Image (cartoon, rainbow, N blue to C red; front, side):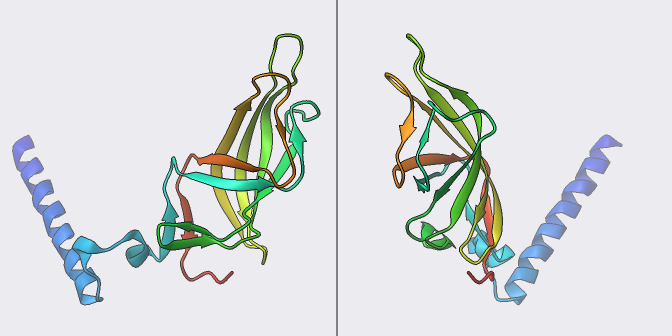
Length: 164
């Protein structure tokens, strides 16, 4: 009985897959070569991607506290491959989740979690990303307009039809 049910499920999945592929082809898509953008209208930057952003204001483990908001920005348009993701000037908003000021033999540490990007026209794009840094000596200090690398934790999805 279990084998019959498994065979029926397999047939249904194959039939559905074949139907979906033929449906995409009838709409002008090539299912076997279709990208995420073609099928969903969304642009994607995958998890574990690195993005470079600049500090809007100076930050330091010397004066930051857990829960402080920090803002970085993109100095140029952000692309992933050939896909345009967000325009220059987009702000990346984060919050410190761990801060340790340098003291004695302890080095300074900062961990920031980023939760959103805001384009120059005000569109909010949710993200999950983080930045961690430990100073070799003293406090972690990031100067205004200094570049850092942020790691994307979850894919960033942006609607292709959204005007910036």
